[in-house]
Length: 438
Image: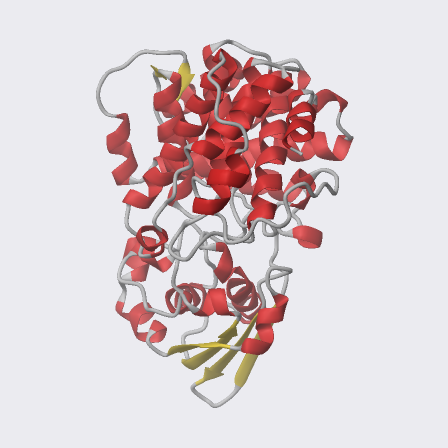
């Protein structure tokens, strides 16, 4: 199976893919870069771009060039920070968020054309997701960041640096599977800033192993079955499944929260879409599948709020929206949000467990002070599967995030991303990002 996967990935050509696949890859690059832009504005990540350096690769949020490895780490860390990164529900992880920063930095460094960058993104995405789908999730306490996403990053780099070389691709997949990063889920779920670095380190490590594989470094064959499955996978029964382009089955996020919360967030969004902000809520009852119900604690910080059902629900009900303008430290710590969050009851409903991983089911019941009741329900979240956002919606999201971070520059950045598909080069995108940060 590894030989067939490697041969297919090495031969991946974005320009020969169906139009829907081509568009999706470009849209994922735009979404990932916009998410990185938002994250780059965080105080804890601004410190990572202090000091002097030189190189040909771009760190989003910095006006100067960086070595590729530094750009991979910093951009990956920024992508993770606001919990807006892309994902793939059946594989249970974040493919483009690993692959895009890995290949973008090297494509810039080597002044490669946009079509090659896009081919590498597609190859890495498809390899990573196929490994992820075989895993059945991760062992208890292990976060998916750094597992199969790292393998995808290595595969993307191998496609970028050695197009058509199936042997190099095989080495990249097995070498990355031999040195997998096993991230602490508790650090991420508790909202500690060190969790940002897990994605950055995974991107950098995967890219380094992909480059090493292209240079000829050999892993011991059988690494995925022997090592990767043992340390990173909950199951390993599905490796080899091939149902066409996985890139068409991934999701992009509507809410800046852990994806397990998105059913709850969708249900609340439907309620406030009809009512507007609510200031008279007596209590809220949330029923959710097991993975979501675990996030039932009231958050003590803005980062922790991204992993808190009660706090994210309270912010959405009181402000009428849940986005980068409302999920802030000031809002999360406000007396009104904390008071309402304490009155949000989160219960595991075993009947909803059957709806995962096919969806992320939730049921919400809002009781107002006058005794009236508002209800909301969600199964498959917005942005996922059959509810995937179309190109206009994704472009609107990317423009909003870019404008939030770099007012007046969103158009130029998005034009440069579109240019990748029309004969443009990776360095043109880097130039637009550096100009935005200047």
